[in-house]
Structures are given as C-alpha cells and as structure tokens.
Image (cartoon, rainbow, N blue to C red):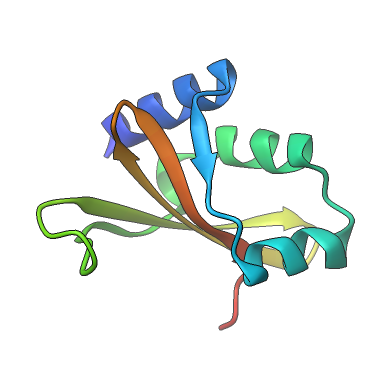
Length: 100
C-alpha cells in the first residue's frame, strides 16, 4: 500500500501524471472552484488512512491494479479518487465528489 503512495507523491511532485478528463472530474472541479493545483495538492496529500479499497483488479485492464481513496477535500465534501500506476506514471482515473 505505501508503495502506491510513494509513487503518487513522487509523480505529483514531478508533474508525471495523467488525469483522465471525465465529465464527473470536470464537473466536481467546477462545482467547488478547484484549480488543477488544488487537485494536485489534494492527491499528493493522500495518506494510508484515506485508502477505501485496493489494490483491486482493474476490470478494464487485466493484470493491472487500482487504488481507491476517499478524503475530505474541503469541509464536508468527500472526494472519490481512483488511481493506478502504469507506464511509470500515476493515472488519475477518477477525482470527483463522492456519490455515496
């Protein structure tokens, strides 16, 4: 588990990440007035206690693993974040308001 966090923090610090531009991701950023820098800082701040699930198999890419985090990004707003490490970079598959 700590390996994904080390890779995440390193990737965020160096800008070596790919954020999938889903509608949910864009809408949550817009709704809460979050900049790309806010999202980068939030993801870099994830800790072991924020892990919700994982490693989980990626149903779309057999043999790859996903990590799902949930953390309060602003007061009373929990964000759902799905990450995986692929091709030597962090892929941010989801980063939006939690729907539960």
